[in-house]
Image 1 (tube, rainbow, N blue to C red):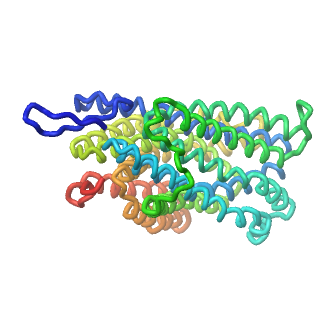
Image 2 (image 1 turned 180 degrees about the vertical axis):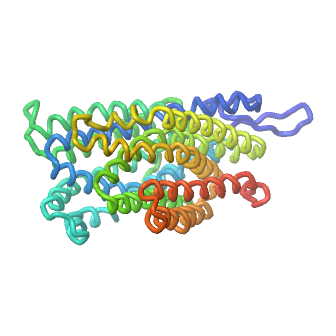
Image 3 (image 1 turned 45 degrees about the horizontal axis):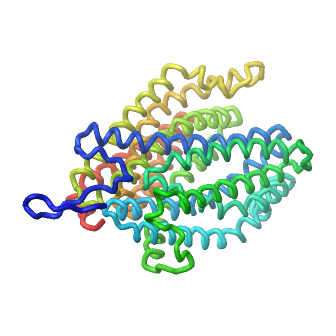
Length: 475
């Protein structure tokens, strides 16, 4: 940030020239800045999903047992990864506030300590992931599937560190308006991952045919390549030299280390609470039979892809709110947050209309019409997609609410809101509507919607009341 004196002698602040702000302060300027930031963030989320889908599809060509093992192994890895990602996300509000007030030294310290934290977390996670087969046997999984999943994770676990380094540097690049670099790296990584999967799973291009373990090696190599590319860009890009990100990297900054931990663990717990809600819903769907579970899986896949848009916008909200918070611009905080909320609401309504008007076509993408169960699955999935339309609106708003509060470094109360909304309201409602009330799978989905709606209302209400709650007092 630069300073200058007005005619009256008062010191005024203005944004760093590297951060495009369109400083007229209008709603239109806020909308433009949000969209410019959000588009590559949304693209990054979609590219990450495509990377994971590639792994699943190619392993699925090996057979049902290998696919089941990959799904179980990937789920265990994902749960451990997603908890660690909270510490990578935590750098976003801290660095954004520092960038907003022009404090390059604080940006560097927060990013450096975030990398320290995710490195330590990766070391702690290793023993747990190493015993994936034992964990799955405790959960009464098929021994053959457990063995294959264990072999898969024992290779894939080494990608935890580069994956979390990439996540932390993605947060940094979003803060400095370079999110498109992360997008380009992940798109490249997706292409590399597809080629490596094809070579190492099936033994093409002179490579050994390693089966499911080949997919794990492809993941590991891809994550290392992506992490190295982002590290190299952050280190040498002329526009980022002001942060000198890796200078004296070995030097600890313990207050910032504790700050990342303090902000990060509630973010991790919030994410795990939502992931756990959907995992528990899938278990309940399984009680209703294979057709219902398959229909649930299809509807969930469709909504998950659509959710990448508000998820990218939520990250944009964190950065935009954090930048204005760091500048002490209270009006800017409100406009940045509410603009993002309005954009998310428009996108969510468009998604809902799509779900309402084209359910057969969307569900049909996942079905082979020649399969004996295709008609049954389609019939079961259509009501889920109707509920998903409402579901999408409230899920988008809760994501944006959480993102705006993170921009104010407010993470502990949102964590409690998530736990209560999802596990005190959402899960009991899903069970009661699904079973005692007799609504089956549709009842479970309405229960999920109630939980998400509660979180959306409480989180956005908290942001609206930010002045009264004192959330703007410390940048």
